[in-house]
Length: 435
Image (cartoon, rainbow, N blue to C red; front, side, top):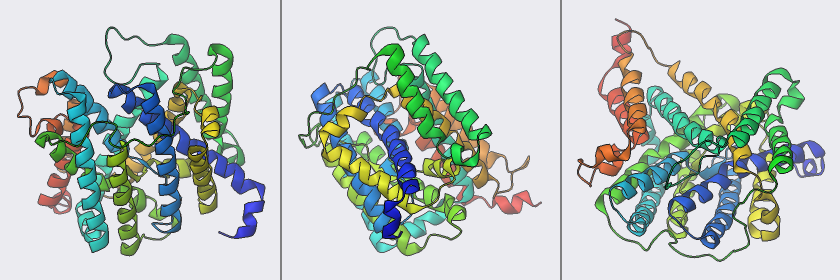
């Protein structure tokens, strides 16, 4: 990055697109988690403001000192899915949200400490050997199922969190969201390279304008409260099942780091070094300790950044740093947030829906590195089908399972990843595949 390039227009246009990509990824998370934990609007606004600041700082630190790649360091989709799943299962099983929140916060802090230890000692690179291409392919595919499900709900106007009474699809909102998703796909496929690089930004701007004309200003949580409250989800408490699930999730969350960095090696035409892995993990672990204290969903490098980079075909680090700085500035100055906070969740979900479809390609590229035939198909089929089927089960199915392991076994993403790690590392599939 050279200083004089800061005074040219292209990096700033690409930086604004990065800003919106970060924004639409992050804005939905505190709102959905706050609604799930039934927090007051002022508390949700505060958590949202804090998440903007922490995300901007995390991206800048990773870009300058960590892995030094244009990869979003944001609130982890794996953790986000776990938060929402645990709220649903805990409510169905009679656990109070304060107990859940306090135990989750404790587990997040512990997992952050463990992540730092992995980063400082170099154990992270050793642990990474367990995450073979077959594991990464299964992980990215299951993560795609989890996140696409969340974004599709947003597109259809379905509320997040624990919902009382009957829920129906909002037809007008859905039709606009689907139109924007199709528009972004068409621009990405049919338009010239210089235009398709900004397909997501075009979709956000057009969708926001049309939504404003048709529906007015959406009722969102105003970013007017910048009070930093500690442990907003509940004071630290110990529930064995929740804490153990959180610690395990923290270890499995490392798949995001390996997936994002390994998966982007070919884009930057070099392999990430062990030192860069260690620095990245140390930064992520530090951020996650802060997340447990401030009530945020923990962080990780975004595997979906690979899809965004492919979508835009812009691999320069400078636009990413500009977008991260703009995002940090929005968090520091509430009057800026109050403007962008009005972006409709349905439009943000529609654009992210398209961006995250690229996870299928990322998964496929990992799976192409392994042998899959009528004998070895089980290495992929077992974890994928088990994970997806568990995702479809209602929480009530798991009431008969002991509370210590219930939060883990009721999460299809975690079960699928663990199955894949075990299956890939105890059987020599390559030898079987070549018989």
